[in-house]
Amino acid sequence: MAEALSWNCHLMIKTVIFDLGGVIVPFDFDRAYTQMELICGLPSVEIRRRIGATDIAMRLESGQVGSHDFVSELGRMLDCEIEYSNFCQLWTSIFFPHTLIPESLLEAIRKRHRLLLLSNTNSIHFEMIRDSYPLLQHFHHYVLSYEVGAMKPSPRIYQEALRHAQCDPGECFFTDDIPAYVEGARREGIDAVQFEGLEQLRGELLQRGIET
Image (tube, rainbow, N blue to C red):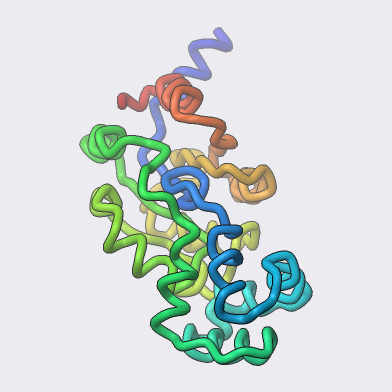
């Protein structure tokens, strides 16, 4: 009986929601910090420390500061002059060219479900990602922290995702590589699991009647 109830629940999934970095596109911030050494003359460890000691990254990703102001403020913080277009190139170098899931998986899901992207990101990163990874075209809508003005795990960004999901929270499935963000989604009533790899994700989707 319990299995039947579980299967009936899984049949209710109408919208599938993906995180971006660490689920679709792999990244490593050390790639950018290493390149910044050449501009600033500071070791990458010190660059990371200075940025991490402030809320500048959070303000960028929550839309509290624009990208040009962010670069200017970062230059002052690191005691160096940073040209905007050069910075954008090195800042987006954190992303690897391959993806963690195949485009075919998104294509299959989109045939039967609404498909949303839910990401803590900024305009510099997302504009590059949108242009560089064609598989993003399969999403019906992007829910982005810098546009929403809130970051995971804030309830506000999940509520914005639910608005675009066009269904009840329990009819949504969400995957993210960060446990705190998975828990944030669950608190809003969303069926959410931590992303641990492609085969694990396929299994979670299959359990919910989502064909890939």
